[in-house]
Length: 188
Length: 188
Image (cartoon, rainbow over all chains, first blue to last red; front, side, top):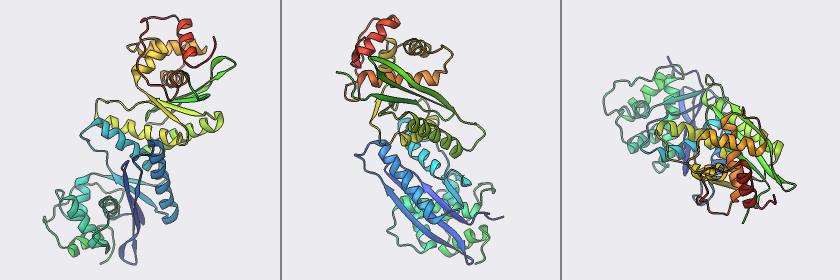
């Protein structure tokens, strides 16, 4: 078990804010290579905003050369109108990663992998990502979400089924780290 | 009244089939410059399919150099899941036209403009587009839909409100043509 892909870009697309984060296994550890947030201007026309998202992601990919990409699965959104707007951002994000192997994971799997519980709160996932990767807690949620998806891919690999793993609801950051690292085939 | 924009690309995006059509005013007439359909392979991963749509539209734009773009407005879709998939195709289409002035029109306005009734059937719109532009009736619906949107933009212009125009339910192709041409500022 474990991932084939060495360096993963995780993306959390949105028409206002798109988070991205690149992680990799290096020297027996999982490290953050780079991450960021692309903010679009609400006053700009949608094509301009989508272009900003696409260019931002293309730039990150050109700079950090990930070997795989990961995004959240399509999920049942509450409103069709907002799903269409989200879809537009997701479309240009998918376009940006065309050519890279793509892993998609549902929210429960991401939470389970990173925070040890499929019902973890967004903030809990964020704290765990920051602790695991040695980031300040002030990192925006869209950025930690993107890093969480990248960590999930590194942990599960593209080929491993994404069934939730039973674990105690609360794990220490160290235990969680060990769990991710083990699954990613990294010695701790 | 009338459009400012000389050459318009209309786009009808979809994850399976994306129609596009370029029309312009030339020598006192409205003519089709070019049109086509981009079909994606259902077996390909979504990023590859979105790339095909984006590349196809970028190629059409590079080749036929439209000065404006037109698409249908976002509409209330029946299912959020299919709205998200449609949104992805719409996103890469919007990306392709970034930099061009964009007009969006609702389906009623398009039907009203092209077929003289906001309740016209899809096939009726298609027949009218083919008659107006001198096309064979075998042209795919996605292509005639895209041409209908382009004609609507040429007729309404980007600045003209898109309130439905009251007209008799059935108009001859010639009367309809005259109506479109008049609105587009072309002498018939």
